[in-house]
Image 1 (spheres, rainbow, N blue to C red):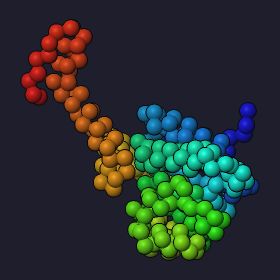
Image 2 (image 1 turned 135 degrees about the vertical axis):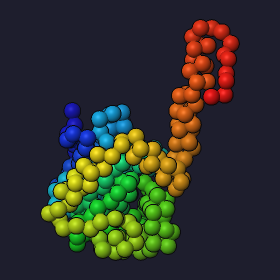
Image 3 (image 1 turned 60 degrees about the horizontal axis):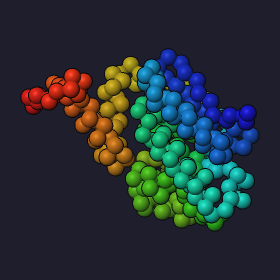
Image 4 (image 1 turned 180 degrees about the vertical axis):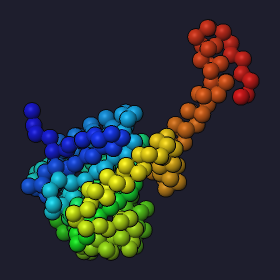
Length: 259
């Protein structure tokens, strides 16, 4: 069985997920994408977890994106199916996670790592780190929503600057443009993330989750599924909803009252 580089530790109402491959600056492999998907699926179904923290292992990097050695030899169709499409599916799953996600950015955040960081609802960064979209310098394009989700977050102009120039920006620049919400000393990153998560976990969990979904829908993030889910839940909990189930079970015509 291959080694897993994605860990998940629960502490009360808070779960901390770590991309834990520091020797390779937490670069992502196809197996790690599979593990990220599995963990997201488990968290989404966990009724005890109220807030999720996503961070990187070690002290140098949050995540520097895709492991080039893993995809460089792929044929075009495999590149699409096993890498770009797969990454999109996994990152979209994280972005739509039921619980609020705090990204604790503990170091370099490049390429797919930046795309992973922005699946978080709240993003906290350490001081003196850097962010970049360097894909064009190695002959490819951002493939996991760097041109889509990031453009919604910081605007098309700033996204073009990052993606077309490949320039690195500092954590202070990231704070100024809204890429991150807070910048803290390296020694305080996990304490601050845990403090914020614990504070959020004291609030009504369903209210937090619904608020997240409403804001996501307003920005176009899975709006169709969100609206259908909320409408279905409301309808199912009306008197007519109960009557519909009862009439089906009793094999009789329903008697709807409009309430």
